[in-house]
Image (cartoon, rainbow, N blue to C red):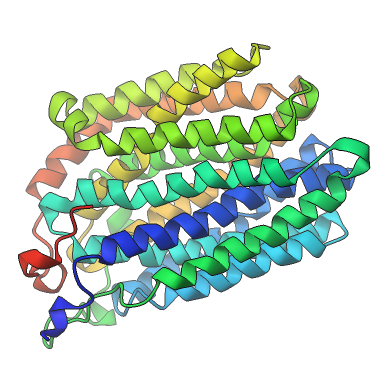
Length: 419
């Protein structure tokens, strides 16, 4: 068999399945960490710190991992990420103090970063330019599937009755570790082997980070991704806190978070026709604008059915930003630094995951548990404004970007996944 034909046409499907398990474990663990921290006496500020530590290690590790991936294989990062996610989940469940929970939450975040950098780089390398929007959209369906099932499972396992939350939240974290380990089943033969003479440029050819960040389209893609992920992250971490204050059961909160994820899946299934109808700039701007309004609306003490409707529309809107920001960054970046550019995008995401929860914790401590959602609304409105100013530039850059090297695109038609 020609080495460029491995691992076959189903590589993207297997990657989506593995990502669904890994993301499902993280999405189950994040609310479980919040509930376990509450059972250990944490307040809103402590929840914000623990949520921020999840992103702290990845903040420093993203660019070095991206550099390594630009000049080597991507697949080894996937099992490493799974091991760290599973270990972080299990050890968070056995931790008996808030500092220990924060530390293991950081390990979980580092594992998630390793998995995502490796997986995104594989999609970028093995997708032709015309396939990138679709393949990144399908790839992020794996994340949405995990975000759909994880909170439901967490809500089902966790009980607040008769003082059981400490025990049941710990059990949920151990179960999450098992879910992460299940992704090993789909990790075999995902990455194509490079044909002789078509490997990535030597390390001496690496582009400076400053040059990448100055490339038109990259800053807009990073900020939009940061805003969308911060919204998803704080929704996951703070909706349980809102539920506690409004007497909404953990199982109901899990269903609400999963409804948001289901709407995101629906959005990504219809991404291609929406792009044809509206274009990238209009789609990014409109969805960020509506998402900002809906995030701010969560601060209002609305009944559960109205909250469910808001989260469904919000989930649909949030489904646009991540895959389109991936494609924007990949197409705008220099050809020899696409993994590094994706890592910079993830660095921006993690910076948002450090700063946004910490800010949310401070805001919640001063103005109440619903106030962080107003802050998120303002962040998404800023992303909408940047979409108007930078989206067109990003799109035009994308359209005129050089094609990927032969090792990343020149594959027989049978290898193009159409899941």
